[in-house]
Image (tube, rainbow, N blue to C red; front, side, top):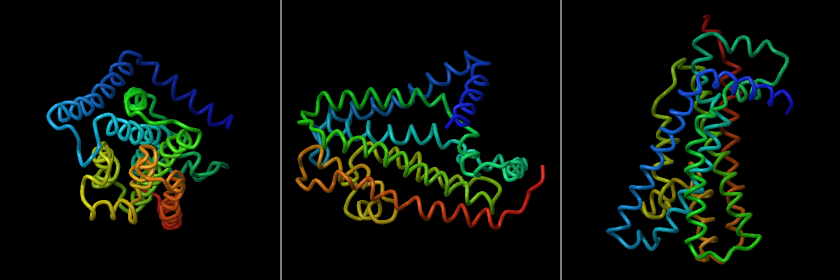
Length: 258
């Protein structure tokens, strides 16, 4: 943990070398996320609900989902930028160091500029909590925390898969953005609004619904089964294939030079 803090300190110092650029970029990230918030707001000015979900419930849903994504984007950014390490031959140096490879890649980047998106998620979450008329209890607070944690782990696993593919392609595959930024875009509404087929896909293939839709039903008292509160933990199974792909990629890695 001490070493990780040292990495974070070094990254922060490098960012603060260009303070104006950092703050302007963070503001841009905040405003771009706010535009999505505005889009939902204006849509609900015309329609009172979407598949039975009212405005405050959708904002709560999206705030939780966006917070999980934002935390993943901050902490797992090293895997998102991993193709650059491969192309430049810098991954060879990581392999030679007497530290865990996953830790080194994880600590190689920390996206402080995503604090703008995280702040937007916090604003949306606070608004959703205050307006959704949820009768909060210890179990429901735990449910919301597990949804955020599960979302962070799920998106981080997708970034690890993206990095694993880079062992064989050298360049990052842009279609992976469908499963990160695309999922974030679709995740602003409960996944049931997209139909039963989509709900099955995001339940059994890439388990976004386990960290968003089903626990949300429990928060809104639309589902009495308290087991829904722990479904985000079940979504962590997705880490296994992601780590398997990563290990497979390392075993077949051949240096790309510099």
